[in-house]
Length: 114
Image (cartoon, rainbow, N blue to C red; front, side, top):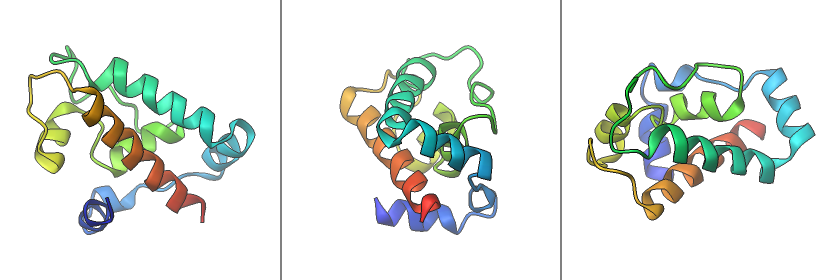
């Protein structure tokens, strides 16, 4: 996981994402367990299906810490996931792949809170 986070940190686009004070306050209020559950739900519903009608536009750039983290970790759409993480496009993500994505998102969020 450190390797991919290191690669992502070298991307001009990916490295510009940061949690806002509002995002950090939301995380503090809800707790990391709740944020993880949100990530699990978002990935299962918005990212895991084999076909996503609005792929590339389904993840907002702000308004939730997980959304920001998805853009920072290239887990915002299936095209980015294919490019950065090598998961096949057009194939439903399995439980292990979804867990990897959630773990990556949470790792990035935790680094932002330091």
